[in-house]
Structures are given as C-alpha cells and as structure tokens.
Length: 365
Ligand SMILES: Nc1ncnc2c1ncn2[C@@H]1O[C@H](COP(=O)(O)OP(=O)(O)OP(=O)(O)O)[C@@H](O)[C@H]1O
Image (cartoon, rainbow, N blue to C red):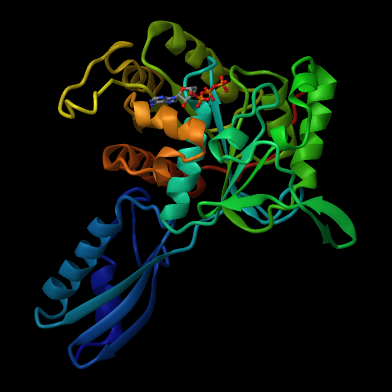
C-alpha cells in the first residue's frame, strides 16, 4: 500500500530549481490523498506565471514512479501563492504583495508598452495584478487602454473617499493622467511632482494584489525617488533598446537604483525593439538598432536578462488603439510578453526567497 510518508519522501528529492531547495522543505506539497494506486496532491508554486511549472510537474511524477511505485496514477494540482516581498502588511498599500517599478534610462524605448503587457501577461497566468501609471510627464496608459478623458469612480473606504482603479482585460489600472491636467504637470518639478505622486499613491484603493506594476517617467528623477521613499519597492524592471545611446543611459539608471543610498534590487532588463520582423517574412530578423545590446549589458552588469521583444508594427498600432499586444491576435508577440512575465515572476520569487524584505528607502543627506 502506498503511504503519505513514501510520497513525501519521494518528493523531497524534487528541487525547486530557482530556490535551490526541495519541495517538501519549502512546504510546497499539500493535500496528499491516496486511494489504492491513485495518488493526488497539490503543489503550491511561488507564482502562477512560474516558467518551471511543467518541469516541476514532470519531476514529481517521475519521483513517485521511480521511488514509490511505477503503477501509481499520479494527479497533481499545480496552484500558486505569490510570496510577498514585504515584511508586514502595514504602511502604504498594505495588501499589495509585490511592487514592481518599470523604468528606463531614455524616453521612447517602450517602457509603458512593456509595463502594460507585463501586467496583462502576469494576470493571464492567474495572478491578481494592478498597473499604476505614475508617468506624470507623459502618461500613456489612458491611450493604451482606450480610456482617455474618462473619470474614475470614488469609493468610501473606512470613512475616507478613495479613487477606485479602473478594470479592463483582467487587471486593475489607474493613471495619474486621468486625475491631473497633463499640460499643467509638464512644468512640475521637485516638491510639486512629489506631493502629487504621493497623493496619487495613497488615494487610490488598490486592495489586495499579487503584483502592482508601476510605469514611471523616463530617466531617474523626483518621481523615482518619491516612489522608493513612499512604497516598499520589491524591485525594478529596466527597459532598453539595443543601441549604444540607450544603453549608456540605461546603465546610469541602473546605477542609481542599485547604488548604496537607494539599494532597490534590479529584477532584470528587457530589451525592446530587439529586431524587426516584417509580417510578410516572419523568419527574417533585421537588427536595426544593433544586435543583443541589452543582453550584453545585462551580462556586464550581472543582472538577470528578462528577454527580447521584437519591433512589430502591430505593437504600435495596438498601443494607439487601446488594444495592448497581449490581448491582440499576434501569437509571436504574445509569446514574447508571456515569456518576459515568466522571467519577472521568477526573479521576484528568487528575490523574496534570498534577500531581506523590501522597505521604504530613507535617504540620508
Ligand atoms: N516592440 C515594439 N514594436 C513596435 N512599436 C513599439 C514597440 N515598443 C513600443 N512601441 C511604440 O513606441 C512608442 C513608444 O513606446 P512607449 O510609450 O511604450 O515608450 P516609453 O518608453 O514609455 O515612452 P515615454 O518616454 O514617453 O514614457 C509607442 O508608440 C509604442 O506603441
């Protein structure tokens, strides 16, 4: 007769590759049920977007077959409980488990495009996701979601009037562009930009989220400093294009976040517009802005490389028409964003397993 102990013993040989420990030690195996040769159990992953899902599933089946019984009929429910990057559920945005800032050294490299599609791809994997557009100087989320000019609703939360995020394509989102006059914001610097942003962060009711993705203005400035000083940021995803001028600005941005004073982990780098593929020649790749510049920079700086997005006409068209690539029809583009979301989720899980919880940055001058 197969026993629970045998199953646990077998699964203690299956390693979670990123976390470097076995599933039993990590407490990822739940609800083992055995009836004759039928073996059912649940594996709780650290993120629904886990790129190792199939690999771990197959390793569990093999372990039971090899170490317990080759006749076992193994059924595994693969679920996920996103691990939080925070120490406690207190302070600003208390119910948000992971805050991911999307940044770039230079403007126009596709930061908003990546932030939006990353949020949608994480949600498609099964996570609860919010997208906060904090790009005070050029908010693009209202256009990308086709809600320009709309006004959000208010809700009463414990006697306080708060702004409800909008919902579309399975995620919650809110843009500072829906609350302020863009023409006015262009001239904001320093304290004005910071106080508007702080209010934007605290006045929107995000409730419970696995991931909150924050789109920021290009470069590194007041907005980024205010963000890390207001919310405990889990990590930063940096977007670049492959050409030298973008790469040198990207390097500066990364140095700011990872420097001793701020010290927010870099989750990795996305290379956008990595190559151009015309629709009529899907197997051709033209390296218009140079080849593998982002990948090389990630290697040089020893940060994770999260993947490449091709330059595709439909990404631009979809962005302008309020239909982001992830909800569009092109499978290769969708795949590219899904892969990047898997890499980001993995980087977050590894960050949360290996380094101290995120905290608000206090800058001593
Ligand atoms: N991979 C891509 N293929 C084709 N077009 C793209 C791609 N990535 C972004 N774009 C387009 O490039 C333009 C700039 O992109 P986006 O607004 O995402 O950049 P950004 O870095 O956020 O810009 P900003 O500096 O204004 O904040 C948009 O029109 C967008 O649709």
